[in-house]
Image 1: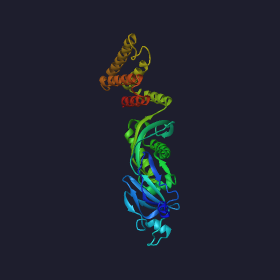
Image 2 (image 1 turned 135 degrees about the horizontal axis):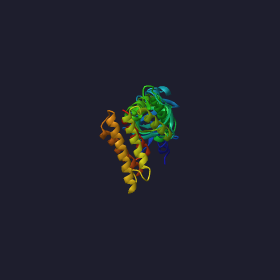
Image 3 (image 1 turned 30 degrees about the vertical axis):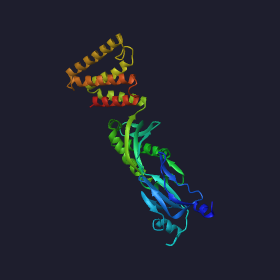
Image 4 (image 1 turned 45 degrees about the vertical axis):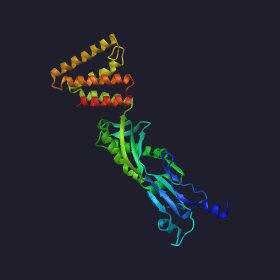
Amino acid sequence: MSLGSFIRKQFVDVLQWTEDSDGVLAWRYPMEDQEIQYGGQLTVRESQMALFVNEGRIADVFGPGLYTLTTRTLPLLTSLRNWDKLFESPFKSDVYFFSTRLQLGRRWGTPQPVTIRDSEFGLVQVRAFGIYSYRVVDVPAFHREISGTRGVYTVDDLEQQLRNLVVTAMSVAFGSADVAFLDMAANQEVLSQRIGQALAPVFARYGVALDSFTVQSVSLPDALQKALDARISVGVSGDLNKFAQYQAAQSIPLAAQNAGGVAGVGAGLAAGAAIAQTMTGALNQTQAQTPAQPAAVANDYVERLQQLKTLLDKGLVTEDDYAKAKAEILAKLTK
């Protein structure tokens, strides 16, 4: 190999990133001891951006396109290095590529219950789960605040940071004095919007744009859920008709857990049917004494709860899904 050929191999003529794997947000071009050839080519593909850093200082940023590296296309780097317009020598610089693709279906959750201040119940502990999507939009900010000088920065690395931001935003959303927990739990779309609005400016600080945010499940610890159920029963007891409906709704899942309940077989099934008939009779008697919603509506609620409990026993729905559906039905009974 000639000396000239060896020297030429120390120059980088083409800078590009082919993204041969998913989940990478930032990648530093491996320069080692090589230098960038003046007049070399920089290829930035769609859904990518490139950043030149000179001695730790951010210089030029490139969007998608094909660039010839000269003092004209590198104005900030030229200024930092005090190059004149006739500069034509190889140079050193750190080059970082960033993926600006939309990161879809990213999951978030609260592994442990989060204590929040609710306008109606005071301090409560909640757990929540959902999905969100985002993209890198401000490359200098993302490099400065998040990825830094690391050779590779991944989606998983970022989400460790984002998870803490989500939990904080969720606490702020629940802690709004004008929105009670029951309203939030019954309308997850409103909760999603509130958390998304709180997260957007925080994500922007790190150079990340929040595209969508969804709350899929909100639940309380078992002990607190039982206390909430008891409070609801006391709250509706002022209306005998509503109280009777509530008792009937509560009795179905309890009966289904016992051998003689509605979930039993043989004689147990007959006993469960008798229980249901007795509760229905109590409802009809109460409705005859006090104006209330039609018996068919109450029976429909009872039937829905019975079906939900059967699905839970068969493992077709989760405890969180069952608790959420039950809370929504009980909320309707209290209206």
